[in-house]
Amino acid sequence: MKVFIYDNKEKDCGGQYLKELVSLLVKFDIDYELLTDDQLVMDKTADALFTLGGDGTILWLVEFANRNSIPIIGINVGKVGFLTEFERLDMLEAVTLFKNGKLQKDERLTLEINVDGKRYLALNDAYIQRNYSEEIGCMTMEICVDINDKPVENFKGDGVVVSSPTGSTAYSLAVGGAILSPNVQALCVTPIAAHALGLRSIVFSSDAKCNLSIVGKNNGTLFADGRKLCKVCPQTVITVEKSKYVTTFLRKDTYNFYKILSVKIKDGFQG
Image (cartoon, rainbow, N blue to C red; front, side, top):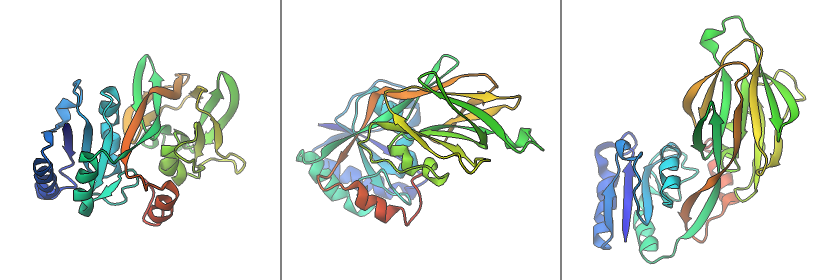
């Protein structure tokens, strides 16, 4: 049995939680390897990936975990920890349940973003925002949205978010999107700061493709899970759809999304 550990040093100051986790893994005779950022482009195998950080740490590791079919065990040493399964004081429980095979798989729909022949993966969302610094005096941008090549709407505002069910509790929720249960096979497109009160979220099948393109002369910027990907020029088509990859978490059999939603939403949105 072997696991990887990724420690967010900004969250785990001094590495105290890493030391505790390593000590427990040694005690339970579990082989481990520490991951660094430059290793995330490699093909590597393990039975699980322990993350020490918050939700942002997990999002940073999604592509690596998906490409290598490694399930994630999230230990929250950040703030909200919406995606993580265990708090920092529960490390003994996490290692014990993993060693005894008592954790359950929680498979999450993952997004694939295609733009100019390049492919990106995201667990939460993809979104286009207007470039504020380049557009002094410009109050809005317009984005054409179509689903399965059928026109839906031209959204006027600060941008558009396309989210997965997991991402529906992140940026999408912050801009007024609907909350989707993680097991719903659907995507959600939501305008950012819409300039028309009638524009609201649209939920559609995850088997469909959503195309986004900027109308007019203004450029925008494409983000995925909070990471800046590239500048987007007018008429460039960005396709967002369900990926063949699935993000897998290992969770306790008592995991209850709705209970977590009730507790965590009071502390702040997923991020």
